[in-house]
Amino acid sequence: MVFSPEQLKDLKKRESQLNPDSVWVKKNREYLLSQIRNTTTEETKPFLQYDVFQWVHMFVPKMVRSVAVKALVFILVLSTTLGGWAASASASPDSPLWQVKRATQKLDEATSMNPESKADARKRILATSADEVKHFAQKKGKDSVQKLVKASDHLKTSVESVQKSIEEVKTENAVNLALDLSKVTTEASKTLKDAIGELHSETDQEVIDAAKEVLITTKEVDGKTLDAMVSAVKKQDKEGLEMTEEKETEVKNVIKEKIAELSAVNVEAGVVTQQVKNAVTENQANNVTSTITVEGISVTTTPIGSSTISGTITSTPQIAENVNAEQVIQIEQAIQVVDQNTKEITETGVKAEALVESNQILEALVATKEMTEKSAVTEAVIVEIKQSMSTPAVSIGTTQ
Image (tube, rainbow, N blue to C red; front, side, top):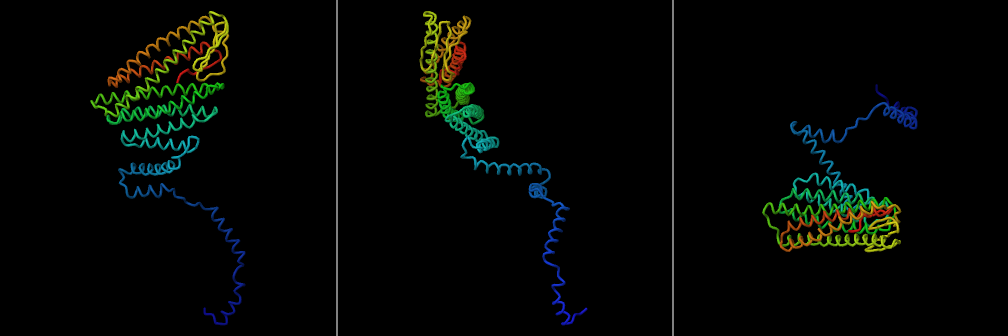
């Protein structure tokens, strides 16, 4: 059919009458589209399944396909972790990112391919634990003390990991690793002991108990550090390797510092027990209430033979009212144990110093370790003496 020019002109004039209203079109178009969306489902393709795994199926041989998939997943996880590490590297222990930092370091340790790189990863974890201890040791309040308990536990676990590495690394690296461990734990132990000392005026039982846990853990860290040094030197001796003069001097200095520390603890323990003896004697002789103080430790005796002794951390001293004759006997027996231990520690210390001077490093370390063990027993007995002599006063130790 062919339209004449006149007919076309006429159709053009009627265009507005032939085309639908634009408002009506828009309204109905939106309605129809909404109906379509509500009655159909949009297919989505998970990224890993369709982009990564399809690639694996296309280009990787079937026999190694499973390994390839695991490797790709690991790479994706590692990339995410590295992003988290970058954000958490400068985080403080109070920050939520601190746990990301610790988790990243654990992953670093787990993915280390040889003993030396694993040892380096464990040293970084140790340093992080030491930073955590330092942070919470400077904080005040019950919550911070509880966090300090966890931080000291982390430190102990980190020390144990480095101990394992000493057995795993090359023999020539063992002593260096033990020395690095000693440097970190020496500072951390001092920080913990100083923090405990600042809590001497606390009366909250939870704080007292928490501080006691920290002190016990600190002594365990000291002992494990010394064990690590013994293991490193034994390993080197077994292989017939000699230490350089520089490393030998460093190890000697570690031993000398430990002997000096334990000797000071020993002297203080002797002073404490002597003051307890004097307090009991004075009480029995004079039948009067008396109080003596030495090195910040107060001993109060009463006519009924009871006493209260407060040490590094204690509640407000209170006079016990029910100390009986049996308890007095137990106290006297405990004092005998302390006296015997202090005597043996003194003798072992002299022996250890002589061994150091004669360059018998391993023997000197073993002797120092023996001093450490006896010192721990001595302090535990002193705590028992205090608990027997005081009610309700609670103490966690008298020495650092």
